[in-house]
View 1 (cartoon, rainbow, N blue to C red):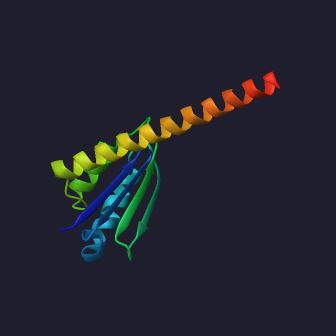
View 2: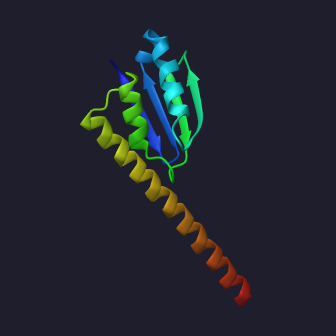
Length: 117
C-alpha cells in the first residue's frame, strides 16, 4: 500500500491509499488522535486521501503521531520513510534558522548605514 509522509515541526501530512479503501480507518484514527494532548487540528481530505495533523511540538512528538497512525492501519512506517521524514524536518529547521539570521543581518546593516548617514 502506498504512503507518503511529509513532516515539518507542528504539521504532519499523511497520504495513504488506506484512506480511500477503508473509510472506517480514518474515523478510528481521528478519534484516537483527538485524544492525544497536543493535537490542535485534524483535517481529512477523502478525495486526495490525505490527513493533515497540526500539533504542538512542545507537547507532542511527531513519532507518537506516526505510531498512532501505524496502530490504526493508516500508515506503514518503514526505516526509509522515517529517514526521509527526519531529513525533511532537519532541512526545514535549517532553512528557517538561515532565513531568521539573514533578516537579522539585513536589519543590522540597515541600522548601521542609517546611523552613518
